[in-house]
Image (cartoon, rainbow, N blue to C red; front, side, top):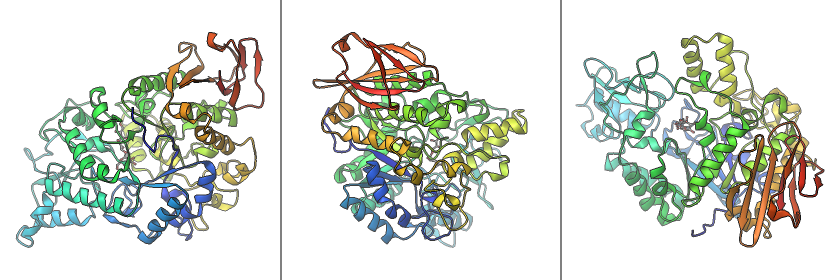
Length: 568
Ligand code: TEU
């Protein structure tokens, strides 16, 4: 497979609203990111993906864009962003923006004009153009055109007052879907993408992209809940034509700019993978590996999601690795701004420790793929629980709370589901130090800080050689160490003792070099036999999340959650 410049890098996601506030308005900003470039460089980060910071009413925290060309004043100015791009470039770092083109905001001028035209066609007949940017349908027998349920609850259709028409929104009603069947809309999007690439951004993370291809909008699906509706994801499997649309973006924008792209690709079939992320001729450079998120999801809602065990996590990783081996290169994550904190999700609460956090980090970083760290992951930030739904900002969590109650959960049970899966878990402000508000802001933070910041913060970990932060630095350094990087980045992935419970072990094989990763994924100690090929011994212990390693002959005694990387 041909090698690409980005494969050996380390990615880092910034959720700008919660990263670093330099103005005291309680909201993080671009200048805050500029101020932290030193920190990011020391961590070994190269590719920085910034969640949306464009003009937005923030109904979905920026994933509802009202002006694609302008930075929201609450986050700074376009000039701030250009400065960030330049300063990053000077350090060989790359800025990647979020491309949200399944939908825009209902406050975008396109949608405002579309509504004006639909409500008063005679006043601005030329705005019919904008009505065609969206999916507008007549009522069917006085009702919504179909029975699809939106991602954030309720129908995907919203009535346009004073008309007999509805507009489509797969997400919130303030996020109307853009009509990708319309060539004029596609041109607008291509122009916008190219405009940002010309400004020097290295590429994009591409939001909710599988949703842009719709199927017949009059099609109803079998109801899957008592509300009589069906999940809108049914539509994705029914729809035909996504690849051609992605190829259009690739050929008009990404390819000519040699842009790096990472897709938020859910609900994909195996047959589509090569077209979408094939390293030879795919549409995107890479896509996030959500296998472990999908494995425990439930159609019923968050209240019905089973916690994931480390053994199931292992199976998910193995599945992805084997599927992608001949196709392309995934981007690995343990969390993002839509998911709970990885350490809280994958490690039982009673076992949470620096050691178990480092164990999970090792498993993520040693897979074949491009690792993305989500802000705060590198210091071991944990979920932040609430005692009342009133403390929750996330629109998705607020809906899931209602879903849980409607399904018969008690308030306590509904709240437990929210505490486990609310998107606010990962959105609480970055914990920089132990001063008030964790050093994130001098004002009132838009979302409250996790009270554990006095214990878990970057400043406390900076000079502690045993900190989670310094362990992440070791992981990024190993990935870039010329003696091993070829194997760490490009080596094949091969499970070792895959059926052993509470053990996640695998080889990474490169040319003339084999690394073995061994991780005890439970708190009890366990003994592991080294493979036959290691009888000559361990050549080198490249990483160890504890200070000792007990080896006797070809047996290794791993302490609880001990993880090691060996050259054999
Ligand atoms: O998330 C997309 C999203 O919510 C779905 O893809 C869903 O998670 C998946 O299908 C689960 O099966 C993105 C953003 O990351 C999120 O923050 C936004 O709220 C959303 O798009 C809308 O822009």
